[in-house]
Length: 172
Image (tube, rainbow, N blue to C red):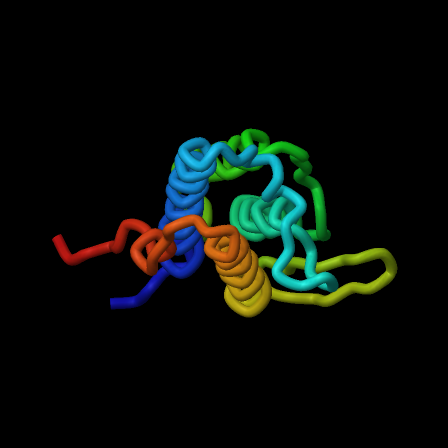
């Protein structure tokens, strides 16, 4: 059985974006129980030279739904989503999750072979759709999801591996 571009990208995005949505909700409950303002975590970092939690969450959406939109447009650039509150970050993830659910396998698979350029200022990298998604967006997507998870763990949120892996795609 051949595996499709949709299965390699969107199916994985859905699983992890759903997990991020879940661990953000679990963290919000934890912060409420502990009397901590969840907005305090928005600027939290694991190290001084790392970008903050808010950037990590925004990047999860940008490297999933934003990556698909970039492939459709033929160009992907950094940035685009902003939120400065915990609730705003939750909305970005929820909106990305809902929009990803609406993507059809046929539409995503039809993007295979399409030229995509990553552009940051004058710097450009040429890709095909599948190489962009598999070698650029997916690694960035998982990096930012993991970093967000790690920041919440560092802040004392009781998360485990199951919170990160989300809903597994089991044999039916």
